[in-house]
Figure (cartoon, rainbow, N blue to C red):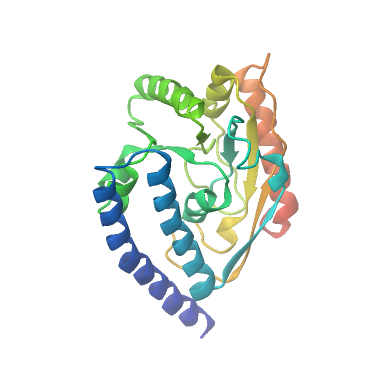
Length: 249
């Protein structure tokens, strides 16, 4: 009976997403003809907040954030950081724009642009969509656009593992985020997220519970090498994941 309840509530949640995204994304695409940049970003972020609110109300997926003082406040417009979170679920891709005080520039695979309505909306934003089959070209695009967007006040967010990893597992940490942070002279902020506790990878079944988001202290990049810097990011995230979700490891 408990699982049946999860299934029904999850189905209701995805219906909620479908019903809300169509008018919201349509409005964003229309608005993008006249408005670009930060104002358009915050309109999209409001829908993501609605989506996360739906997960909490319908499915009981709550969250708590630790270490928010490790990122600059909204009043500090000149400060830039590069966010490097653990990636377990769709939840954090929806939640970070709601949680962070600055516009975020995601680096994501271009196939997401093909999703009706949702993809059309994010295609209107200042994001970096890459063809992962062309790695050299993809990195050049990330380096060029990432530095430009950060100079304009956005924070770049890159998932070092590249894709979602199952709960209790560890993916391969790639150096794209550390290379960009060093190139831009921007501190890198490691973030641990236990989202698979409630919304497992490649699953449409949401379970009630509390997701922990733990934000580490910014790591300076001056004089660092990408491999060595990413090893420090990886060590902090994985140690924190084991502290927050010990039963998974």
